[in-house]
Each structure stands twice: as C-alpha cells, then as structure tokens.
Image (cartoon, rainbow, N blue to C red; front, side, top):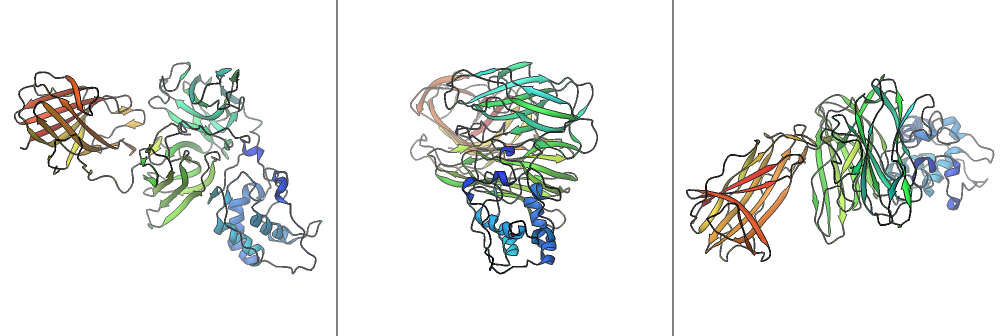
Length: 602
C-alpha cells in the first residue's frame, strides 16, 4: 500500500495468505510439541469466574475472538468465551483453561505467522488461567496491541464478482522493480457496494504488492502503462484496497464501499523477479464482490506523515496529527512502513477529556508481515489521531519518504465510516517549523558574515508570475535575503487542492557579488498544505558560485563552486535589490516559480 511503497527488494516469501495460516489445530507447527498432558497429581487450579467475566473474557474476545468467539471460525475447534467450557475436562482429562496458559507461554498461539499478543495482555490471561503459576516470557518478532483482521476464507456465494486482472503480463528475468498500471472500466448499470476485496493470485513468484485505485474523473487512459512513465496516481484518484505479503481479503460485515457507473479503476502492480525466472507471465489482480448499495458505507484514508527524512546511521521517528471532523468509526487499518521500520504507534487524544487512548502499537516490525488489524474505534469531532513510526537507519545515506523500497513510508491505510472526503490526513506534527537553521556554505568568500535574518514568505496562485525587474548594473557587495514568494500556476494537485493561506516558506540566506562571481547561499523550509490539511514540502539548501555577467538573464555560466558544470540564473535588479527566480514542477501537476529578493547590505 503506498502506492504501497515501491515496495520490496526483499525476497518473496513462500507463505502469503492468512488462509494458509489458519486458527485451528492444523496450524500448529510440527515442532511445537503439542499440549503436554498435565500430571495426574498436579494440583487443580480454579481460575476465578468473576475475574474472567470482568477482565479476561474481554481480552480473549479481543485477541482470540475472531477464531474462538461465540461461534468458532477459521478452523478453531471451540469457543473460549464460556467459563464452564474452559473448566471442563476433554477426553484426555485436560481443561481448555490449562491449554490456554501453556500455549501462550510456548508462543504457539496466536499461530505462527501471526503477530504475538502484547506481553502485558498475554501475561494477564495466562496468569489468570494458571492462578499465577505461568508467566509469559517476552515475545520476539512482531508484537501487536490489536488483533489481525481476518476475513472469511471464501466470499459470499450469493454475490456477483468483478475481476480486474492483468492479461498474461510478461515479467522478464531482469525485472526488479516494475510498477505497472492496468486500467479498467467497470460495467455497472447502477451504484454498487463492494462487500469484499480479495486477491486473484497467478504468478506469486514475481508478485510483490497490488494497489487498487478509483479514477472517478477518468484521467487514466484505457489499457496499461508504466506507472512512472504515465500518471500512476491520477489527480482525484482514491485508494480502495491494497495487498502485500501476509494480508488477507477485506470483507465488510454489511454494507460496503460504493462504486458507481462511469468510474475507472487502476490496478497498480509491483513486480519483482529477484530470482530471474524466465518466461513469466502474470494475470494477478483484484476481485470485487458486489452487493446492493444498502447499509453502512465505508471509505479508505491514509493517516500519517507524508514528508520526513531519516539521517544516516540514526534512530529517528516521524509523526503527524489528524483531526477528526465528524462522527465516524475506524473499522480496520493496515499500518505500513518499508525496510527500516521498527515500531508503529497510533493513538487518539479525545476532544472532550484530553485523555489519550491507544489505537494500535506494533513492535518488531516485519516488512514481510503486513496485515489489516481490527481497530474498531469510535471517532468524534475534535479528536486528534497521532501516528508515529520509528525507523532504524543502519545505512550510510539519508532516507526520505517516498514510494521506492529504499525510501520509507508511515501510514495507516484505514477503512472508516462514513467515507472520508480526503485520501490523506496529515496535519504535520506539533513541531511545524517556525525557523530554519542557517549553516553557511563553503562557497562563500572567506570572511563573509554568518548573520542573516529569518524570512517568512507566502504562496500565491498565478497562471504566470509578474514580470521580473529588468537586468542592469549590479554593485559588488553582500546582499541579505529580504523576502520570498512562491507563484503556483494552480491549486489542484494529485493529493488535493492547495491551501495557499496555510502554505508558507521559511528561509535564511544571502547573496554575494564580488569580482565577477555571484555566490548564492539559502537554507529554506517550505510547509505546503492542502485544503484538507495534508502537509508536504520540506527543508532544502541551495548554494553555488558562478561567473556573473550582468548583461543577460537568463544567464548560463560556468560554476566556480562546485567547480563543475554550468548553471542558468534567472534574475533582475531594481535599485539595490536583486531578485532571483527558480522554476520547478515540484508541485504535482502544477508549476512553481519561487522568487527570492536580496537587498544590498554592504
């Protein structure tokens, strides 16, 4: 999910589905040893029934109830929610309550391949079941505070299905990261609810992940294309479903997610033929189970920070807030990071009490075990969700947020009801920048002062920027940054409309002209926000020195620092002020002209 990330150079895992893991006895690993009989002379512990009803039953319901609930599911042999049943001997004279304590202690439940229950929760259940004699050892591997979401193995037999699958797409032996987009039009006569999303598996040897997008404005052209040569995520498109190794289907208890006639859909498929298998052709994709548009309606949103960096050889967290705007319910979510992730945290600060409640915590993150989790959280207007990811960057390079496997992500891809109007929720964290550090460039002439003022600049929507001042004679001297403004050609982008009133740039810098050389040195931080509060942009440093000729703009001239290549400078002068302009397409689908005005100081 990400576009799930350009998600993995990690070798494909052999076991990919929740259904292959199961819940019942058949899922027990061969070397787990089974349940050793209790010695006949062992004292009979009688766990307290009142405590079971008040403390333990809710825990078993939360962490074991999907399989061992009132009605056992997924191959589980029995319910674990009745005290009398737990206390009854089976044919071997062993009680279920004793099996619970042992299997939590041995780590054989939840089944291998599923995340372990948080130690405090598992210990509370085992301590009750054993009357204090069993202490669950610290869990290794992936540990979760919320249970995985498990859909039924088979979809509703009475519902029609709609398949969006590739058509024998060739994946060559040299393919390592092929992001291919397949475009489909749904043959619908009226609105339908998608009751269930599930994978259609074909060549799992080269399949890494799949994302299903809705393209309601039909920007994507029919057919298929390289997601990065074309528009992998067209403007206005929305996440609907994502699959990565370990994830199951998603099935709503009733109702579903609405799709409508005339909408277009994109299946983004990430292929990785790391084993160099020859002659591979794939027809994997996504299957939708369609129901009448009745009952509860759901939608998907990505909650978490969209812009961050993890310096080389550091442990660093990235976080952001998301303010709830209406009464809603967080149904299930899929926390997502890439290879450097170590822990995921999401909690909510209640608007009425200020009390912070946990939603989900994951420790021992595994990129190869990405699951949907049962969150079941009620949300109220003014509640603030905080999402935080912790990363361990053991590499020698700074890793930034992005779509490649070697980039990072920090999202909870969540289904909520009612459906949200936004595709992301990222309001930044509590440390939105109010200043920017200035560290002078080595390109500056020796002895240049490091005292530069802080400038805060706005962004303005403009099809084209105002005319620059004319070129003319420029006096030698040191020019301090006085103002900055960004002119953006439009506010409509792939992740929503820009909120130009909330968008700003912080900068500190200077420009030095001396003996035919112009030196530019600016540190800046752009906080770019959409109308829905999504934040992107980030810090940047621009420094160079070039031969300067006041007779031309644009001026293309050799660089003197670094002493390699040429640079094109767009500039103008008015009195003792020099204006420099940079034109970029950093804003998806729009052009940005950034202007910096420097006034002569000495």
